[in-house]
Amino acid sequence: MDRTFEVKLIECLSALEHNEPLEDILARYPEDAAALRSILRTAIAVNRTRPEPNPAAQARSRAAFLAQADELRATAVIAPQRRRLFHFPVLEAFTLVVILAGFVGSLYAAAGAALPGTPMYGAKLTIESLRLDLAPGASAYDALLTQFADTRIEEVEALLRNESEADVTFRGTIESIDTMQWQVAGIPVALQDATRITGVPAVGLVANVAGYTQNGMLTATEILIEGSIKPSPTPTISSGQSEFNPGEPSATPTTTEEPIVQPTQEPAIVFPTATPVPPTATMTPTLEPPPSGGGGGDDGGGGSGGNTNRNENSNDNEDDHGGNSGPGGGGGEDD
Amino acid sequence: MVDDYAGGQITHQHEYADRLLGMVEKSRQDGVHFGQSLAANFRLAESASIRRDFSNVDDELVLLAHARRLEPEALAEVHDRYYPSIYRYIAYRVGDAQVAEDLTSEVFTRLLSALRDRNAPQNTLRGWLYAVARRAVSDYHRKGFRRTQVELPESLPSQDANPLEIAEAKLNREALMAAISELTDEQQQVIGLRFGGEMPIQEVADTMGKTLGAVKQLQARALASLARMLSAGDQ
Image (tube, rainbow over all chains, first blue to last red; front, side, top):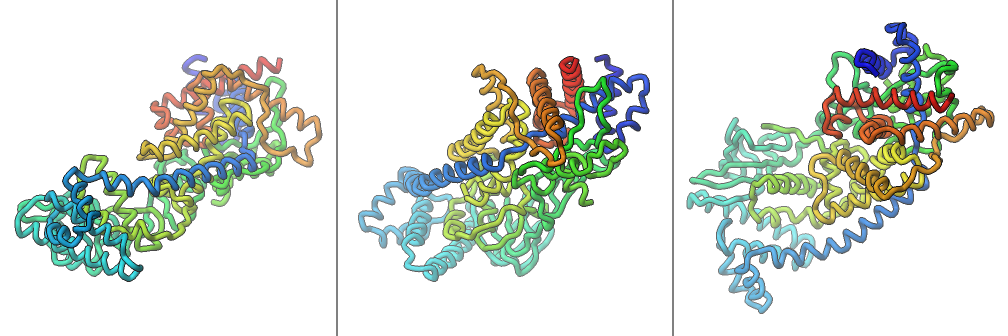
């Protein structure tokens, strides 16, 4: 295939994907129409001959997949607790042994004042975790969480007073917001360009802050704000949009308020229905009823939907170049 | 700095913790260290057992984060969402329904192994699944399996179609799939991703690590080869 023809073919394929009628496309290059027709019809045939999964096979695969995941989860539940025992350095591991030997009270007294970044801090967290595990009920559990959350704030305050360096996290109410500094639970929180904020900040909301203390300042690296996270555009191609719409970006934001069944639903290739194949062509358009079943994830506009629409409209009319053909046609035709 | 997080609706307190845990985990992988107090602060995440509907979650990273924690609802959504396109991609490349079903299941089994071994995809689930599917197809071909008679079930015969049309359609499908098997590996990839995976051509380029122009060229050449082979077979 020479380069000139190839360029024409690429252009014609693009036109086909834009739902241009086949004869209009071929009219651009009458001298190559026969060769182009054969290839473009092949493209249509490949698109219409798309294999669809057997629903029973898909269901079996799903059941087996989830069963395997259950087994994995059962073993994974045990592992983290074991790993936690050996997660800490030797000193903390020894400290845990001491706890088990019955020295909880004295040990807690020793570790209770430990700050982040100190050797005993790991033991302090271990004890807190054990206390949570041993909490007699939900209210006691929640009370401990509140107590420990207050402890985190006290630790940050102590680190700032001492001008110590450590990684910290804490949770508190946003009291004020400035461009590069907030106040959360009475603690000044400095922001930097790299600080990632999730959610829409507002005074009065609760913020979960992760950052580090240094030279008497707390700098946030991550802030997660509770109660304000809203759906917002994500860079996916929405249902029904063709990637080849002139002048539009290839990725268009969509709102998550509209349920989108597939990550991408734009038609990969949309072809017009074709007239009966002339003798030189190789593929004969066939009437294909709706597929026996598509995947759950594709129902909103994937191949099965597209097949249905193509079949219903395949009256061998090349002039029918509406949006009902091609994959993702279910989404497209909704527009 | 402000970054709205489009990850679906928050329905319970613990989900904030989930989010921050996910972000912290990613930061750790990027070399940023966080204090151990995070675990104590967010124990709610471990105790809550809210069932969550992921079917409306269009953010792949959110779905991936929950799948990484082996949450059943998230894993079910992953399977439902990606099985059909992965199947079609594989079916285009191997031409046999049973083999395609087996290999597709294998792809999802490998996903679980990756989650178990903490080698799960970090940035894109779909791209990762297609990469695994490609390896599964390569392994299959490497084992020397010959392409069998094409028996790909597609649409049921139309009630209006006569037996001749049905037979003709089957023959055309068989011829087409046989012809696809004769394409180069890259050409098969493009056909599989474009027509099977219904991928936009730019995404095909990203998945294959090629330029847009190169993929358009591959697609054009693949279709031209198919047309040539089918035309020769027809004669």
